[in-house]
Length: 138
Image (tube, rainbow, N blue to C red; front, side):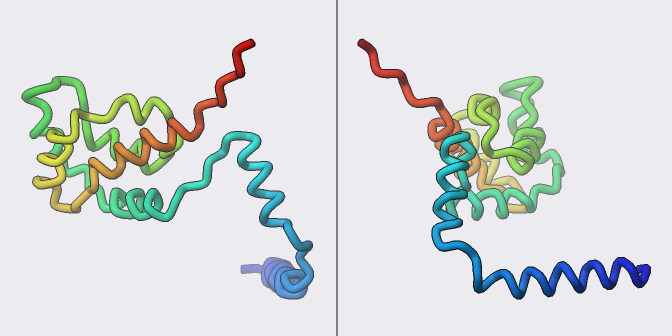
C-alpha cells in the first residue's frame, strides 16, 4: 500500500468516527422511507438466516440428481446460487424446484444443509412484498 492510500484510509476513518455522534435525527427513518418508496425491500432477519444457510451450497449436484429423474432441465443448485445473488428476484420465486415435499427430500440429501423450503418461502414472500400496490378501482 502506498503512503497516500494509508493517509486517505486514515482520514476517511477519522471522519466517520467524528461524524457518527452528529448524525441527523431521523436519518435512518428517512432512508427506510426512500427504500420503501422504490420498493427495495430490506431482508428480514429470518430471510438473512436462510441466505446465510444457503451460502453453504457446494453445488455438489446431489439435489440435482434427486430431481433429474422427475424434472429434466431443472437444476436446483443453480436455483440456490441464484437466490444467493438476489432473493428479491420474482422469477426466483416462480422457479422453485418443486413442491415442499421435493424440497424437503433435497434438504435431506444436501451435505451442506441448504434450507430449500425456507429459501423458496423467503423468495415468494419477497416477491409478494415487492408487488406494486393495486390501484383503487373507481
